[in-house]
Image (cartoon, rainbow, N blue to C red; front, top):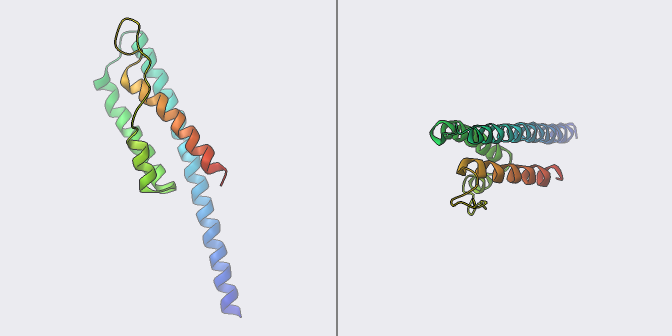
Amino acid sequence: MPSERIRLNNFEQSIAERDYQKHRLLNEIAELHIKVGTMRAEMERDYNHRRYSESQWQPKFDALQDEIASKIEQYSSPAEAQLYRHRGHIQRLPNPTGGFLNPLLVDICIHDLEYLKNFMTRFCRE
């Protein structure tokens, strides 16, 4: 009997530790969601002041994307991280004078903000 009680206690501790780690990762993903929003605002500010340079923003964006994908993979699965990285069709608003209203990275940030909000909402309910 004592060994069974010990196993049960160890099992309960491992579940509590897993739940703690999941909660911690979800909080970190929420913090990254805020970073995406901040990055979007900064890019839009640069764009509106005609200072936007995709070559300057791309490395920052890539680093943040890698960090987000890593946290998603740790929280959920490699498949979920792949879904995040390979966004598929991103809706973009057309510019009346031609092209698109926003730079591509801004539109990806808009998409990612919605994706992360839905991700967190879905997993908070578990």
